Amino acid sequence: MPPEYRDLVEQSTYGHEDRGWKDIGNSKELIEAHSLCAGCPESMAFRYILASLPNPEDTVMVGSTGCTSLVFPMVAVHNIHSLFGNQNAVASGLKRALTVRFPDRIKDVVVLAGDGATVDIGLDMTLQAWFRQEKFTTICFDNELYANTGGQESGLMRKGFVAKMAPTGKKFDKVRLPEIARESGCCYVVNLTVSKPSLVEKVIKNAVLLAREVGPTYIQLYTPCILEIGKNSMEGLQEMRDSEKPGERFNYKEYITDEAKQYLADLDAKKKSAVIPAAQLTE
Image (cartoon, rainbow, N blue to C red; front, side, top):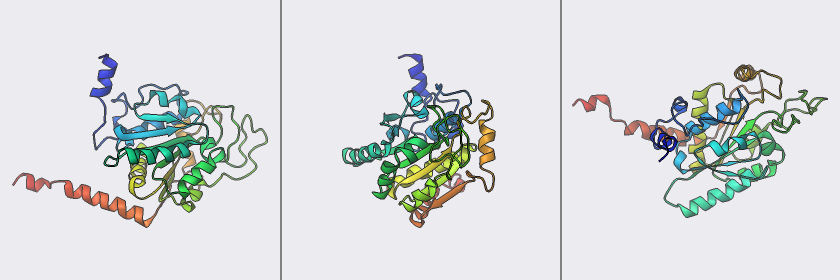
């Protein structure tokens, strides 16, 4: 076998319960290379998400047209490219089909799309999946504009922002999709940036685990297009840190239902009970 394939298999984190963002840089399946712009926060987010999937070998990701579609061909996780905006409809059918085909095996479905596909063109499919309580996770890479088609405004662009193809500035407030997700039946909703990898890891794992049993989950990640907002390639991290300060639009916000909270508590209790106390090992 080619050495690249052997490295992929031998260094893979598949099957490791403690896999996480710290494996980035050691494992080829966590995106060894990508075709995004230098310093793009989406490349950071992609790596953190892939490293945080609790069951990557039995996970199917559904993507949509956009910058993310440039990365999916380089991802060592099953993925489907949907038409622009219908990713949640595709994921709904996929999740149901996998449940029927593999009734005794956990199959996770994760949607990953930009703000245009999630809140603009694909809003109907996004909401209907939540209304129907489809059990999968939706992740939105919020660029706050259409990043790969010239910088048009999106519903998630903040009010007053001037872009190359929005020269008079956004006329209305940023759509409050996290609040809409909560009111549409999502059991777990988080709004954050990708500046803190350990926090992203925790949120992604929670979202996928809860989607298995409790209901739909939604994660909104700020992944600014540094090219379109006039930043240099090394300024993406600082841009995210500035946007998550108290009172800013990406200050960390989490919503979790009582049922979801109890489910996570039960999982944590089972994990702790499975660990043999060190004192017993010496007896």
